[in-house]
Image 1 (cartoon, rainbow, N blue to C red):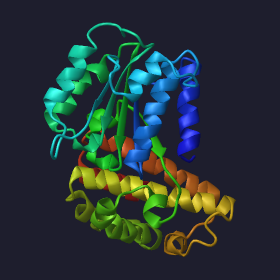
Image 2: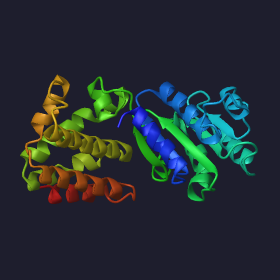
Image 3: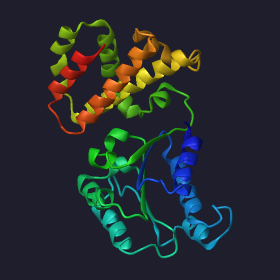
Length: 285
């Protein structure tokens, strides 16, 4: 789904009263995503779905609405004082809105203290307190935040390999070559040789491992989609990825994606990293 489709899914969840208490939007354009989030906030709080020049919409536009708090980095990080301000302001029910809503822009810049402070809302959510986290660096958002949010890829177009893989330039530079090397080994190496290499990957930092596993899953998802349709046929920058995945058997590819999903879930529990990779290699088809 592209950004507009995701926006409609989120809005539909509010109309159906099935919305999450916290959304994490992973995007390739933070500024555009922020504008869409503001639009979502107006629509879900306005009796006329944001179509009327009402008091609520006006105060949201002017950033004077008492039930909407927006925080972002102060320098290089989002500081704990900003999060304390949210908690203090939302200690009572919304004053004029249907929901009290906080927006954390560039959520990857939450420091440990500010992220832990936010867990009050995420671990014990109130029915009318909603959070929106926006980031272009998913792995920069600490796992305790990620695991408690409903995560959406909020993408504007797919004009490059980075957009298609849903990673930033810094993430590409950090792990793409390692991931692509692992992709080829998984197709070419017998299991015992893969297991000999397990320590090479387990010595990496946990956030790098998370990024590699998610990137590997994305590559297999692209292969799956390419078999079902010709959507990547004319994209030269995807050819190496598609050619490096040997199988065109949809059952095999789906099983590999499911295995990666399970390993990604296991990684949240800080299991032994070498054992985790060995499990991946042993169960790989």
